[in-house]
Image (cartoon, rainbow, N blue to C red):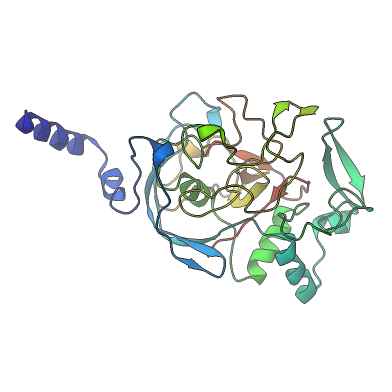
Amino acid sequence: MARSRRRYWWALLLVLPWPVVLGLQRLDRSPADSNTLGPLSVETSAGMIHIPGGTFVMGSPRPATADQRPAHTIQISAFWLDETPVTNRQFVKFVQQTGYQTTAQRQGESRVFDPLTGTWHQVKGANWQHPKGPTSSLMGREDYPVVHVSWYDATAYAAWAGKRLPTEAEYEFAARAGISDCRYPWGRELMPNQQYQANYWQGSFPGGNRGDDGFFGLSPVKTYPPNRLALYDIAGNAWHWCADWYRPDYYGYSPTNNPTGPADGESRVRRGGSWLATATDPDNDPLRVAHRDHAPPSQTSNHTSFRCVK
């Protein structure tokens, strides 16, 4: 019996792609039950987490939207990633030192979703300092993710901070946190032990958010548990801009080593879902680690933020 087991494992190693096998040595990725795994030992510095390099299968082999297929093996080099989305407190420092004006400030308006009516509005005077409109402020929201920022605003902040935006592949790799079978950054189930793991929409969309997780909009960063790599809000709360251009067919020709996205496009990738994510469609759930979203780089709204890499 022992000899037959050994033959089975040697046969499996011959069948598996060697990059996948080697990747197991760098970041654990095949648990028996992903919901029981504890945190990994991570290196931290100045609010950033060191993400070890490794190999993972990007995309979804399950039924999913076409742009998540085919699932394909990717090699990622090590990098540092902000532990949370950039907060209003951090963005204030950037503006104070540079005098930067965001896209929404220059345009004089931004997109605001009204949860009471379930509709989007272009609101005059809405911007990162006035997230709900000209009469709103950041008082008490210093540790909320900065929103109403375009892709251009995010890249400007990242350059000022000596960083950059994550690639789509880096974001998914970090979200998975070494778990190959995960549906969400925390494991297979949306609510393990009936505990909320992220800020998202509960109830019928667009006009029936029950707020069971305690929030009807954005929440402060670090409200919910981090994933195994100590990353907070890697799913839910606010979408994250990524560096890549978006094309729905990119996975069909993506390079396998540190892909940076197509050469051009009309929209930039967003990852992670937001407080508007409903999590009701198993094949199109924005909280899933494989889910892809996109928007024009000039778009600003009250559910999109970013975090940085170096």
